[in-house]
Image 1 (tube, one colour):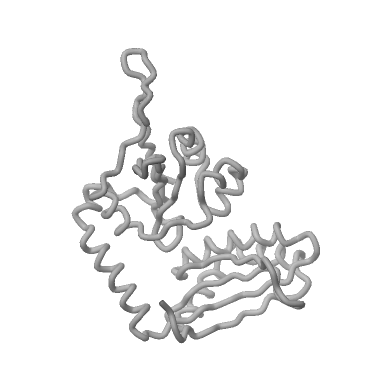
Image 2 (image 1 turned 90 degrees about the vertical axis):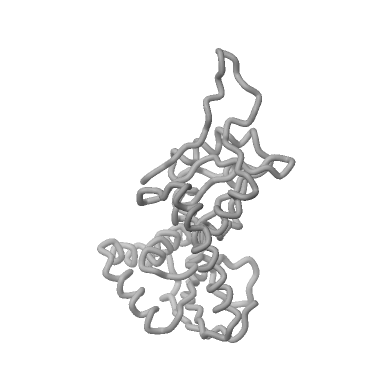
Length: 247
């Protein structure tokens, strides 16, 4: 895991400085960051950071402990903290602090591979912007996409444990090339509705089959299925929907 901490030296001449010890992101640079990392983690916020155990944040959001500690350390300077990434937050994300006047500051950045220097990101920003435009165009141009859903009915008291198991599945699916894998927890449902849904988008059924094979070939998957079976009232069911309209 590669982590870049952007905290500046807050001591000058032996005196603690009152200014925010993280570099401010200019409006121009923010547009380049957003072209490179266009997806904001909607559930994550400063309150989640401060009220949630770091072990769960690592499992649910892929936030390393070093990153957690730096965000917590810098939280007092900001009204809000956001995480931006590719598709979902586990691909080279950045943590951004936002002040009460809307100014953005770069707290830290992390990823499984060596991080691309920002100067390289700036030079390629037009390419990232083009890719984002093409993705938007495809979503509105009638190109067929699908949503795959796995439904889970859990035993009483086992829903939280099962939800944490699905976070591991989400990591595997993302690594296999799955689009927007996510875990849905039932807030209100009719009698017989599942407690949890694992959902992802796919370009075609053939791509889904290849992704499933990659996941099931994972050496840890068999152990995972045995552990999951003990948490369920019945076997999970898969459904595949064709998206007929999207905005």
